[in-house]
Image (cartoon, rainbow, N blue to C red; front, side):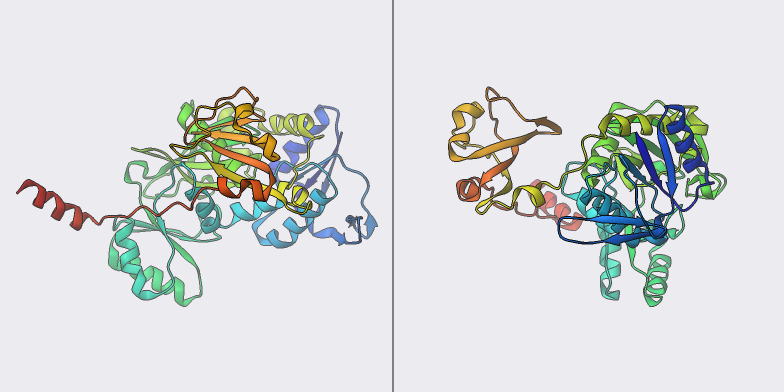
Length: 399
């Protein structure tokens, strides 16, 4: 197998380890400087040039795209995708994970823990936003900071207001995030490869520093990850469209809280803390999946007029409840179920004997007209009751 590692730093630990792991397994591997590509676009012939020469054939590429070259780097990854070259991390996944706001927006629609977060621009909205996330102390984050840079703990509301106003005046976009006190100065990094966590460590801040990043002096220690945290890490990476990711989580009283999903996780800290061959696990995964490049379902399947992909929800009282997929009659209506989501489980290519239950979500491909009546009504947002209102209601009820 011939692997290309997209990296501008061939001497950095992570790149060197990946090259070493690939060579030990008998693969041909080359480090390709992301900025030396040229993208060639022509009808039916997406192509790439490297150092002004047409790129030779590669079976797979592993992106290690730095934050400063995200736009061009993801364009190169996207071109490899169009050429049907396998990549564990898609361009879309990298872009989604690189922006803290975007990644939290995507995760927020799923049943997965995240710290309560607000994003505001108008000065008048700052105080209400701080209140909504639980009040001071709060965490203020720059949208595109890395390695703990641009992460500030504001101990009081006045300090938080001043910091946010200063950052806004410098035209910086910031997030206002609930401070998880029980996890102060520590977090968990889980290294996800495919559908499993291959290594995990706890990072602990030193001294008065609340940021636990190794780059900020944090110490890493081996941990035995609880099943709930492993499941949350894998699910978060897959939701973001990443098959190799570093998932950072807070250990809260309510369970795992996803802070960030990193598409180019460093390997030095986690291999040092765990003494595991993480680079080898990544290469082994690529070798096993190389013949199955990522497919954009909507791009490939919606070219047929009148056909498309839709997610169908089975509500209580539906005539489908209690029937097997065969008995449902969906196939007769030219509708095929690709996956069935039940709770946090995903059943791929479900058998015809599978009985449909209320609450099932089915990803289907077929005639849009046939699916129209099955598309669920949009969920109404839950009404949030302020604590003052709850206290008033309780007082009335007890009188």
